[in-house]
Amino acid sequence: MIVTVNGEDRTLADGATVRALVTELDLPDEGVAIAVDGVVVPSSGWDDAPLGAGAEIDVLTAVQGG
Image (cartoon, rainbow, N blue to C red):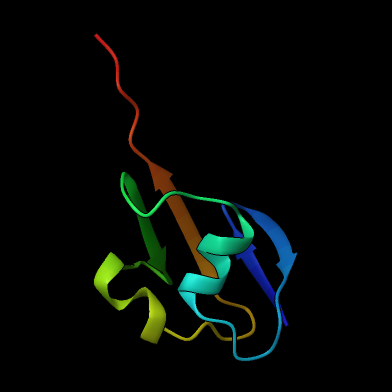
């Protein structure tokens, strides 16, 4: 299936979860926020949050600065 991640199309396996996307993108478990179709999915729910074809996904990472 095709989803959009930060404005770019990406192909994922049917039935992929947010956790599968995080793993594929090699993202850490902390310091990352994922929103699916405008709704933030808490990291505690990544394993149980399925993604559907056409989903709009925003991935935000914390940036440390001074």
